[in-house]
Image (cartoon, rainbow, N blue to C red):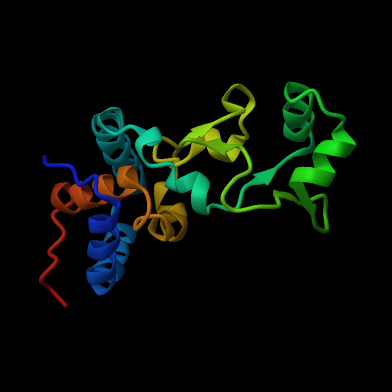
Length: 170
């Protein structure tokens, strides 16, 4: 399996394969959920160790990050800031206790590395979340990141092979 690591090539391929990928999503929805989860996790275990996230950092450059009060508490303590100062500098608050980081790219991205890695937020720890169950229920989100994450891109391209997706059929 030859991995594609060029962000430009990934973006160009994603654009060219938009219709194919729409069909692929429909193909995946027809598969057994447990078997699909197992195959995605197997591919993730093979592909992820071959890709250095710090060579890319695209997730930190383009994702909106939701955070919890507990995560904000940990991050503010890590940064030796009051929670109020942390919120004022880094957080946008919405209704129903929704909190998101107020800047894209992430405030904490430095040289493609997380400057608060030890206390990074759950969404950051889990991304690209291919190890989680119920993959089929997250296809929209996964495909949103297909054009920016080399791990997702390569897992999905290999998944086309292992699930016998016929890219030529309309």
